[in-house]
Image (tube, rainbow over all chains, first blue to last red; front, side, top):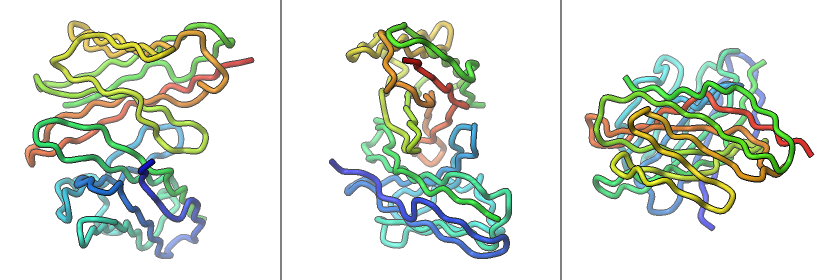
Length: 116
Length: 117
């Protein structure tokens, strides 16, 4: 069964260090999302790609976060420098682009980041 | 503005009891989509159901059923004869088209369901 792959599953990093997360969406899915989920809360969108283009990064803290999807397939989310408040689960999701029909997003297992 | 409210933070039931998880949404659009996801301790969000705003027919899938009522902006989820494996956090989500023509998902804060043996 096709699934969204994320790595690493867990990451511990020191404050002010750089950290990167990788996501490989389901094959053929044009839309890719990065969400952040703080413990006890729902996921919040950080950035959304359609193919290789960013279509929504309004909630991405651009002074320290960056995201890319160079060939419209896999994606990398980077934080530099990491802050204590960045500790959270980072979830990647993908969905088909089917015109006006909104299909469901499928999520990876996430990367749990702890900043110490 | 879009908003999804899951007022129940945590629910505990005994195995085999029925349980309903509430979801209330706000949107100004006439076309939108509603979803339920399950998040077990492993962390992955598992898709359960999608409902279009123009289809108010309720749906049943095994022990799961969903009640969509546009008049009250609610999309409630019922588990019949709950089992311990149903223990998880359940999220309701709303999506509507953005100005760029893509869909943006807004999640509620989730309801933690504990099913006790």
